[in-house]
Image (cartoon, rainbow, N blue to C red; front, side):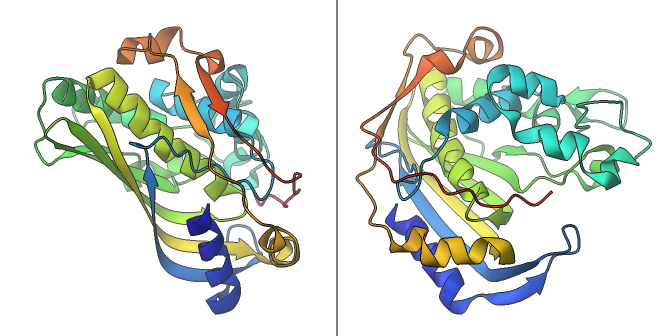
Length: 283
């Protein structure tokens, strides 16, 4: 939580105004932020200076792991987070590759589970990483990347959190996640939970101890219409202690994550927080 607040304060103090072409809004921006989360100590990096909706974050992660491409599938899991980008993004609505209501195109989990090959086949990046780690193998390329420039025109949004790099040292699994762009008041709240949970899940299904999840952000920003709430409300609040995440121990394989796992298999204990803050969302 302190890392999150320090980054927010850094943006307020040192940020440079940049106009974002996609949204038409100005952002107060800094370059390069490094955070780390102690998954081994089960200190869930859930924001406590406002209410955080952790269930939607984990539901969205499950959708990525399943390779979903429809906002309807995400909603069914408990994550309405793709509704706007799938159905209100004018550039995507005008895109000839869009296949109708709720279609997200070839973004995020689709790339992770079915990266297109020139011969017409696909590569399941997640399956390769799970299989290797389950055998105790680390080829220094245990990487899942959602960033496919050749198919940007086939999706509603370029991935922000674009690459997850797993590393195995003995029986301890580590994760380094790379993010090109981060809406800190809204997005980072989700991203932190997802990076933490991804390492916890991958360690559990591959039979390893979780270590530390490292989170690297290139462009961290606060939109102009979010700044006053961040500066005058959220940064004035004192954080509470980090809660803990409980994952159903019966989740033992990638197939389990693909089939029967729901939000009921996750619980957060000891979460104390300040009241919600309604930050504007930019499509």
